[in-house]
Image (tube, rainbow, N blue to C red):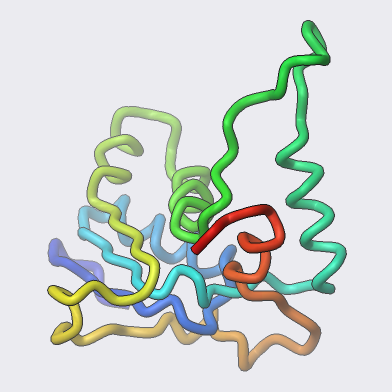
Length: 147
């Protein structure tokens, strides 16, 4: 990994969400701008139905004070899931908020970024995974995202 103050373009295809997010959080804290493309092709390790059930349970969290009221708004799109995962790994201080402003996450590859050189985070690649995995696109569609 290069830790300089520059824009780093990352292709999320076949990268594991947690490992990718922790590496990106380090880059952001060190002052880099990070652009992540192909957020829908990021993977989460585990059995498909188990992961989807966990996300559905996460969406249905309600408040104790008013059980009839649906809890906080949860995003279903792959780019927002990646964004909020990275946000959760940043410090809960003003420095973390500044770092988060240097992050952009896209579904697919926008036209203006097609000519960029994208890097893959090798430690986060799915080739090192020895079990089942699910793409964020599948999870999002099962949650009701119309992408």
